[in-house]
Length: 223
Image (tube, rainbow, N blue to C red; front, side, top):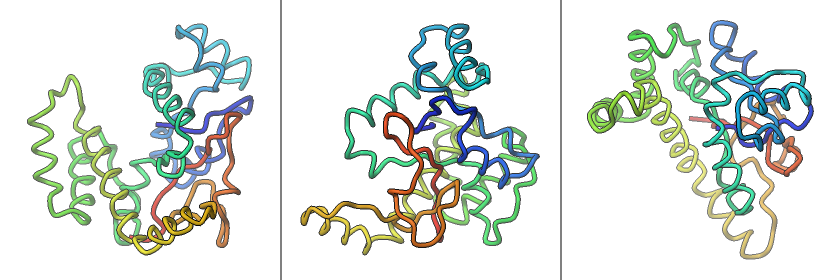
């Protein structure tokens, strides 16, 4: 789910940078999130019209169908500022890309049988339980509720999140000590972002929307 939303600009720079990194064949997996004012509209035509007035772009049906979840996440983060230090936006297609030891481009689209197998193989490089967990999820949830590729997307996000926390356990301990001393947490904590911030940067340099939420897509710096 997107977190920081466009205000009046035609698109987020993090989405543009990620599309370029994924390449032409997979850039369509990165959709453009709605502007914050469009998110407040109650029907698709009105939301698309407001978005077009502000950003010059109409909304896709894909974007509109995600409105309830985007609104839910947006409300939670705005009501609980402390979660903004713990909840980060990421993107499964990029995580599948870097899951390969040489970060080789994916070959197949994710909804094809070949694409599903390709992503499951890469996921299995980082979790001994990937195959079993995938099969368990297929049995627990009907396809009318959760598609096969959605299960794999959720799994790679969970696995990479866990790996990020494990690899930064000592840094996490230091964050806790800093918070007790009232020191603000500004480090990137072993993460990288789209757009790239460069070495020595801090969270304070991350672009933010009008509500103060970060407009960045995060991923582990090392695996």
